[in-house]
Length: 354
Image 1: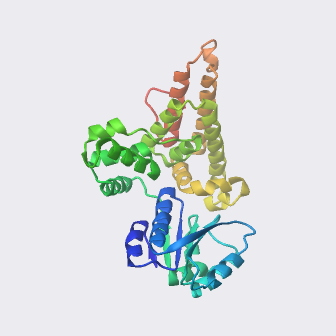
Image 2: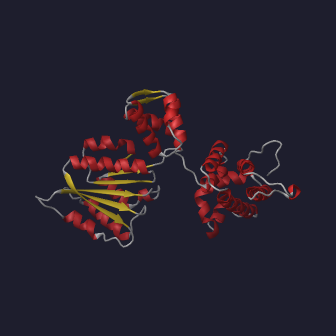
Image 3: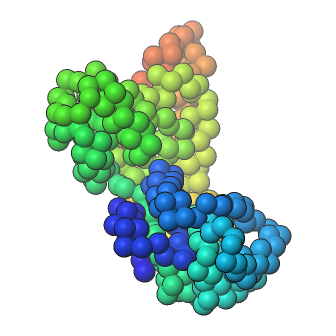
């Protein structure tokens, strides 16, 4: 049985399955699903629990012993298997399939794993678990759905948030569900249950988003102007040094310039990304495609030159015609902001920094 994370409680009320698989890359939802299963299991008499971290060299005989340990007097047990990859090795697949065919009625097998892709969901070990137990796929909640998630979460905590309040928490937390949950818990502590106005949310919510230079790279490739400005200013306010940001941006610009040249010469983008030099770009393919549509080869060259200008400003120097001029930190950050906007495809009128 495949279910969504929000369905786990209703499923557990109908009865505890012998095997659960919870997979995904969103920590809060995964942890809460696992906690729900463990809590229901404890209430159902599963008083003993063993935790096994599955990595290279793991002895899958443990699972076979777990399946064979039948006793009228033994405590009911939970075997908590934590996979380090989205797919167990051949021995692991065989062990899980064998166990799923005849699950031990005295025990509960609880497996957690990183995100499993669509193709792997059709593999034998997933089908075996699906046949006797429950598979929970946890997917990240995108920005459009996050305010609704915040509202539901708040209602569950006894709060009534306005749409503006839910949107503010979602925006300030930048998709971090744990941060959203913490903000809701804080509002409950501060104001108790009931309606909470936008003024109270503004006074309570702190900016929980923390960014890196590579978050900025991903954003400028997508061409998301509003978020690009927000990340740039957050990095500035957090005290990140300009060279740290420029290093990531220059790497991205030079790579994009080379990729654009090869695509223009007749190679497919997929073919270029199969090159070992560019495999790191595969997960950025969607954003890269958008950026390649926005910029020509000459445009990429101008952007690289613009990054060099930001570097000179960061060091306090300017262009040749500005000999003797010392640039302030604020001017350097202003120039960086114009550069990232230019990568997004926005050129500010009257400025020729890029």
